[in-house]
Image 1 (tube, one colour):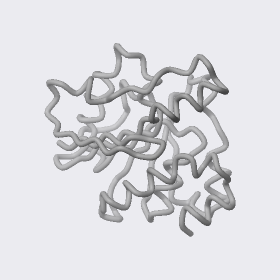
Image 2 (spheres, rainbow, N blue to C red; image 1 turned 45 degrees about the vertical axis):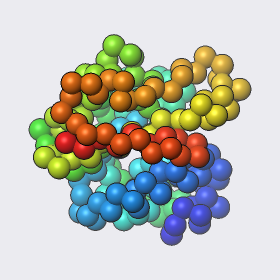
Image 3 (tube, rainbow, N blue to C red; image 1 turned 90 degrees about the vertical axis):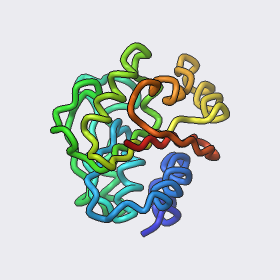
Length: 190
């Protein structure tokens, strides 16, 4: 099943993010056995898109997250499109992740980085660097200004998008920014 077929089952909310993330996932050409972490599960859009591309994914968010975005029916969404067996969940905090150094080949984050407290963003990036391997990739999707404006129509207090490169100075990473229709992609490599 591809994201177009998944859109018919999961609807436009899924496709709102999947259109941009699917393109980047394909461009990265990660090996199918890559160890992948999805930070900020939400409704499962990114984990599902990764699984639809043939990747096993560990996804998670803080157990105490009581925001409107947390604790959604991601597993049911994954079951609807037949990829639930490709996704595992573990509750964790992005600032102090319970994973060994170099545990992942790639860490993905969809629309969650701007929800991290500003004074914690460098610490989060440091954790992601610590938990990715020597050739690790950190891929952060942040909403475009247009997407933020759409979100604010329903949630006026929603925070502005963050530019992760503003917090990566001094960290041993190379970066690339790719403009998207609804989400900009910030790719960091060790």
